[in-house]
Image: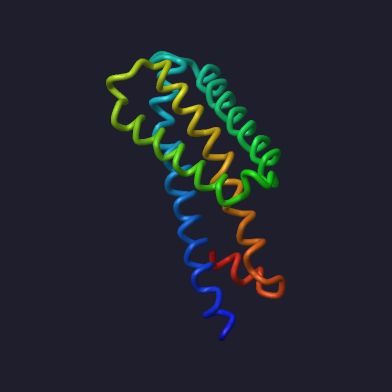
Length: 148
């Protein structure tokens, strides 16, 4: 029971991090996906064009994963800074997409959407699953990882 009390702050912070990752990074991308696909392919796009646009976005997200893998162990950056920077950039891009959706060109919408996909993966999505594995003691990792 003492261990639970000692790790309460870690559990709560990791739960909020995971919740933010799923709500901001993942669902935010899905919220703007239809606007992005129309901006990239046009109103009368075929299924092949829409699938190609989705594959291009998946490729940009994959680049975010690779970038995160390359810099996550860098002592100058670290996991926490990578996660916080990713959340700030992704959140800012989503706010801009939401507020300026009708006022910006489709080119800028595409750039912001690709940026949100990249920074959503290079930061929150990568570190959300790395940090709990390092925070919790080895003998309690499974229980607390599931809780967080």
